[in-house]
Each structure stands twice: as C-alpha cells, then as structure tokens.
Length: 341
Figure 1: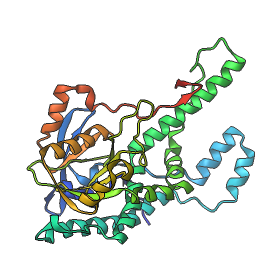
Figure 2: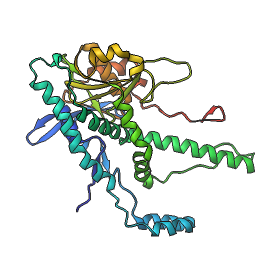
Figure 3: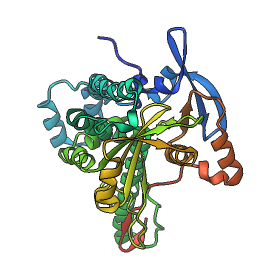
Figure 4: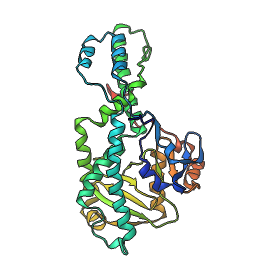
C-alpha cells in the first residue's frame, strides 16, 4: 500500500461544500491571514500538510534513544511490533466516510423538506451519537490544536528546566538553557493526545448540549476554515474564561455547508426554554448571525479561511478596523507559582 503524502486535517469530502466544482475537481477561495491575500485553490491543497500525522519508524526511535543512552526505553521498544507510521491517517480516512454520511443526511433533510422550520427532529439520536464523536475528533485533529498542545508542553517543560537550573546556577537567567522540541515526534505526541483514555468524555459532553441547525437565509455564505469547530463563551466571569467545551454558556459552531450551521449550546446557561424553542430544529439566520459565525471562523482559524465566494468582505472590513484581529494569538496560558509562564 502506497504512503499518503498530503494528509488533510479537515476532510476534502467536507471542504467541497465550500467550493465550486471545476470539471471533476473542487476549487475553493482561500483567504490567508499570514499573507493577507486571497486566491483560488483546489481543495486537495488546503487544510493539509505533508506527512502531518506520521510517526517516526521504530528504527528512527531506536537511534534517538541510543544517542541519549536510554537503555531501558530501548528494551521496551524491542517488545513492540513494527510501528504503523500512518496509523492515524488511516484511522481518519476510515472515520471520514461516516462523518460525511451523517452530514449528508442533514443536508438532504433540509433540501428535501417543503417546510424545514416545522420539523421537530432534524438530527436522529443515532446521527447525534456519531456526529458527537466525529466533531470531537475534528476539533482535536487540526494543526491549531497541535500548535496549542506543543506550546503548552514547551512552556511547561521550559519552566521545569528553569527551576532546575536556578537551583544549581542561580546566576543564570531563565531561558539560559533552552528546551528544544524534536518536531519529528509531533505526530506521535499529537496521537497520544488524540487517543488518550479520557477522550471518550469529549463526545459525551457534546451530546449533553442543545443541538440546533442554523439556516443561512442571506446572500452571504458561511465561511469555514482550517480550524472549523469554533467556540464562543457567552458567560462573563472575572476569574474564568468559560471557553471550555463543558463551560457554562459555551456555544460551539460547525458550518456543514455555506447554507447550514451545526450549533451546540450548553444547557444550564441557555435553559429549558432554549431547548423547547430551537432544540433539534432548523432555525433561521439573519445577516448579523451569519457575520457573527463567520467572524468566529476568521478569528479562530489557524491561518486560512475558505469560501466558494472570492469576495471576503467581512475579512477586509476586519483588517481595516483592527489589523490585529487577523493575527493568530497564543491561546495557551500556563500558570505556575501564581505567575503566567
């Protein structure tokens, strides 16, 4: 079996709903926040990276351990079978078919319904369970999550090293001894984060939220991005960000086409009335709603935003009003000893 070189962290089967068909191919319009330019691109070339999920081979790991003199670790490594370096890519390739079919069901249910806003169940229980798992993986499989995870690990390890160095060499400034992460292991570290035993709690949290499908009735398409599952914390608090997926007042949004948007809202904050009014229903979105969710895609994207429409009016407006709003700021704060690292 040949290796997959260009590995997507947002599926092509999803991206085509934000693209224009050109013969047998699909082309989306990309806005790149780093270059501040937009351009058309085949969906094969976006939200992807060469060998993104791959692991080092067993021989490569062994060589690295030998260089570090990790005899015990080498002994443990020898007990393993050959490492499947594209195991994660294979896992997501198989999972994406189920994700596509469940999203297609919702798209078809809207398109085929003469009165979509009168429906009482727009997502079945079986679909919701499958979508919760797929959404959890989509949220955690992106480059943005990987960079956040790496940043958190780097900051924490640097703090530990600084403490150790300070004990023996108090004259040295923090950072005098640098922690350097071997990027070759980023895929393996990401996999450990994706497939840890606590992951099963993630879909269960999502299932407990109020699920709604927003319908875009404007001429402005919903954007998507290289980090398409976005969040917004409605509850203000002096001490907590309330930005976690289970936080009171959290809202999670995922555009499933330029017309439809999956919205999950935390129950305790939005209440029983919200469950009755728009739980498991199609609801209409006005211009201000569409712009709000597009704003979330722009600000929470890692680098790129995608649309079938080449006219990124909202982004151009944001850039003029506040150029810093397009920058990718650190989303990680590590606190140790009462101080931010």
